[in-house]
Image 1 (cartoon, rainbow, N blue to C red):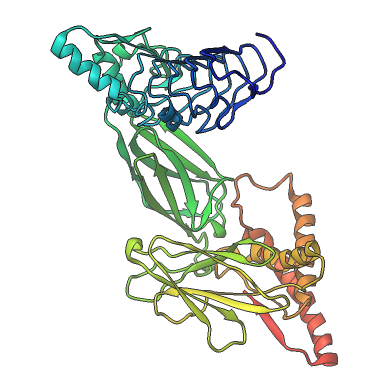
Image 2: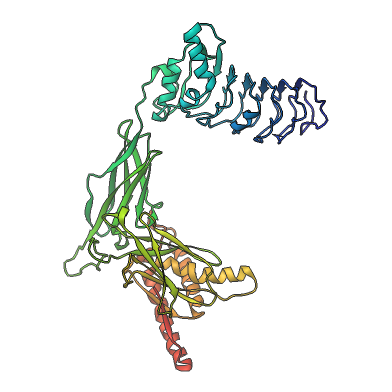
Amino acid sequence: METSMRRIPEDIPHDFTKIRIENSRLTELPQGSLSKVSALEFLWLNFNEISLMNIKSLEGLANLTELRLQGNKLTSVPWMVFQDTPKLKILDLKHNRLDVLPEHALRHLPALTYLDLSFNQLTVISKDVFINWPRYRTAEKEWEKEGLVSNVVLALHDNPWLCDCRLKGFVEFIRAVSPPIILMNSYLTCSSPASKAGKFFNEIQLKTCMKPVASAPETNITLPLGANATLTCLVKARPGPTIQWMYSLKIIRGFAAKETYIDGDTVTSQLVIPSLQLADRGLYTCIANNFIGNSSVSIKVNISSSSSSVPLPPHVPMLSTDENPYIDIRIAKQTVYGITLEWYAARNNPAETWFTIHFGKYDSPKKEMIYIGPGINSYSVSDLLPVTKYEVCVTLKNHQPREGQCIVFVTGSDISELEQRERLIHIIVIVCAMMLAVPAGMYACTTEARFSCVERCMDLWKMRRLREENLQRTERQGTFDSLQSASDEGLCRVSEEKMKKRRKSEDRSKGGNAAHLY
């Protein structure tokens, strides 16, 4: 008791029947830590700092009948460990940090008559945990047959129970518990949600879980430039869903989204877009998820021209199912040796849409083709060569690439030091890819094919950082993670004029070829 012992001694006599190490500093039960003490019947390890049990930590303890681990730091238990203790009758795990009780946790505890899981962090468990427990089934049959059988005591109180539809079966089980099953404390209470916090299980009624169903009062909105837009999404789900708004491939984090519960099962999510800009046009999707499934609804935002004499620039047309559509493609991630692509096409039948990726060196007449199945919108390319110009296109299956479906990029110099090589690739691909993330048709920047791309991207990046610092206080709230056309079109044009002048002077001296980065 109260020692500085950090591990179980290896020289314990094999004929010991009871071991008690409490208020010490044990941190784990390693494999076979007591396997030589085959006569052991009682093991008390209360109030230590045990946070880990090896799946073979009770190996060789076939005679163990009592295991007490109260007041430790266990967040989980490898329940298969009890295959080695078929005679175990008492298992005390109270005052730990257990937050999960798997469906078959008690399968290997056929002789158990006392289980204490009180004062843990359990929120949701299934009634099947006990229905699948051999001792529970046996006790019920014996009670019905003879009326005399040893009681089975369960302690489940003082856990932060989440009383929503996921707990419905367990609540019904607790209400129906009767001898020979006995609850040490039958007054189990809810901790959440707020509407049920503090209520006893016998005071609540829980409904069956339900997959989210998303809808919108308006799915096509037209507003003038500079107006504030509010997009509303209604979601009915049980339990409450997680709701995200997406614009093309980008999850919207900058705009303010407010959620309000109408009743226990229905929530409204409102996305506020202040001062509409041209870059804000397009299709916005409200996506709702819970553990059963997901649902989504799309809302199209249009911007009307305030002057009939100044028409708005054309926007990406709505897609039809019988043509090769526009596909929004971008570089989502870069590593030292590769990139990850993401794309988006608003198809009417996404569950049946196949894509083809055309990838290879820019000047190669024949590109490698990779077929991508439905429901996938990303692909990673690795083992890129240094100082190489590549082209990658995404089309519908077996379609040839067309304008707007391709990205051209250049990798950096293969310098001996990995850090410098990574920096070059990131300068050329990441910084330039940030321009790719803007909605297509907004602008295209041209640059020299070789390392002038590095210079240009660095120029653009420095100018952007300077502009952000100057405009930080006046910048409107709520922007996309991607660059906004309103702030970068001018940046691109200024830089492009400088690059044209530089290119003319270089072409006169070198006669070099120009390449484009879209």
